[in-house]
Length: 154
Image 1 (cartoon, rainbow, N blue to C red):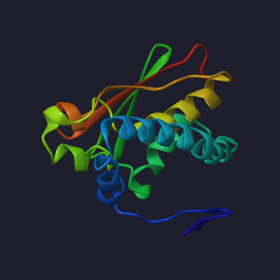
Image 2: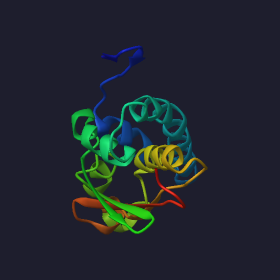
Image 3: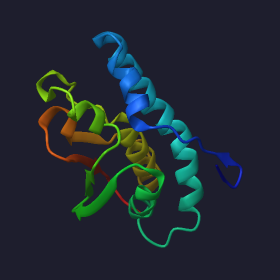
């Protein structure tokens, strides 16, 4: 699939996360960190293109497109100089949540934190790191919670 010059690939989230689940804990942690960094870079490039025409906070624009891309249903709430994002049915947490949640890593939604970090950095004009405060893979349930704090949001 293509969105202009950007090529997308369809892959089952359980296939991707199933491969990550099969890694040793150290290798899994490295892969999740690498996935965060990669989405921060390449997802940030896409977010930058959306920002050129955005008439509202970029995080809301990205949240609106997330379900169509298979990234779950995102709800964004602004709280002072921060945004709280709740992601229902994260494709990254779901395969882990099917396993024993007590044995799952604390956070597996690093692609989402990578995208949110990129979006927040664009909005803030300087580096911002998104934080996953609750992951369904570890805590159970269907929702993952994230926060991005901004010094001065556009």
